[in-house]
Length: 475
DNA sequence: TCTGGGGTCCTCCCCCTG
DNA sequence: TCTGCAGGGGGAGGACCC
Image (cartoon, rainbow, N blue to C red; front, side):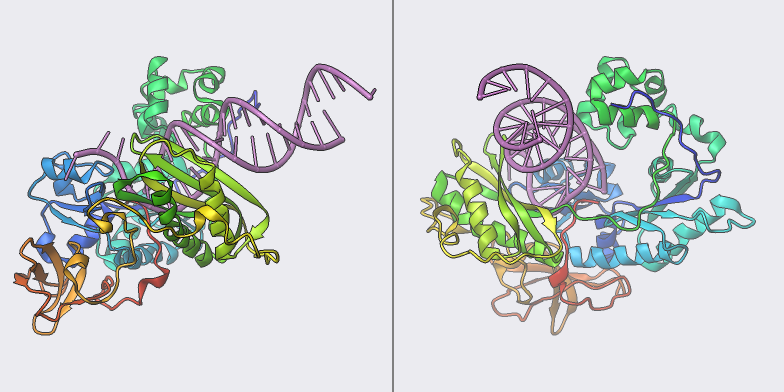
């Protein structure tokens, strides 16, 4: 218990930058598909349980927000174009944005695919001062990536991040130390990092709505209402106290995968039958980071949206697919399956970089629940239970024709899938960033040589096979 | 058609150990 | 030897972020 919180030594200049791409996924789609520019675009899952990962500003103007169900978003904005995420393209655009920062400093801390901090403390701001630095940074990122970005600067990460939010869309805000109070105090507490709907409601109950209200609260009250860590954090934030350094690297703590099924799973056999596929995806991610794991956690979300997790820890870290699948099976055995299941997840934690060989695997691999079991689903549509597979490249099949995917046609060139039609044909719009708005054609994938291909990069360059691609959260 | 998927961090609780 | 307590560690769940 820290009974005392004191002001840290803050840097004198607003030399921490936060760069944030605007509606990133949607902006990339608009950059690569000229016909989408100026139009509402929704990026996200197109299945019955899909949600919006990103909405263009045109869609936001009609009330669409990220994380809302795609069904409600479509109702709010029926004229919107809906496409599935293309992480290979977003990663390539992201690399360009990060490159703009790395031209100025090595001290870059990516927070997610579309935003990063940079410590420009060693940069000479020159005649135009810090606002000039921020403008130049923004212009360079736009030049390299070709999507709109916003830049905020302040003398802390806290202020820089809030400043970039205030700068959106496509702007720059630099908060000088003397202006910090004027900037922070009127803000709603909900805009602070770490204050979600639950904390905001708890604060509302003690009359705290703005940062100014927050500053009026004693430390004891805040820790009582929000807990030790969050309370202490907000006490500092309310005063603009934040001396966290820009950290170039962060250690990964866990890796996992989860999948929401298009229809609920009934009974242990159905759930267990899906476990190997989900564990495999989690294992692929673990392997990509080159680690071993000691703890395997299985997550089950029921139809009523309640969620349980059960964990099994191994005596030593394992990097062996079969051993981890076995552990996942044992964890699943601990879950009481009282209701239909909508989501199944597997996560690996207690990671260690050096995999220790599990010598005594014999006998442990073949134990019950984790083994693939015939689905036994009485239902009509086996595909409803199919876990998300890596989208293949190669000849387009109707069932793979998700809207937004890149294709190439021998006569019409490069394009993207607009819609798989009920008549078995596919609507494709043939265009790239270089061509300008293109023509939409309806083609029969059974007779036309439509090839599913990878995305292009920011300069229209072919990208490598996305085997190492990392699915990322919404922008 | 309510409510994805990748994470991190925190809190509470229980069990074990000294 | 028994008991009570403190502290550590792990598991479960929840809040939060993008």
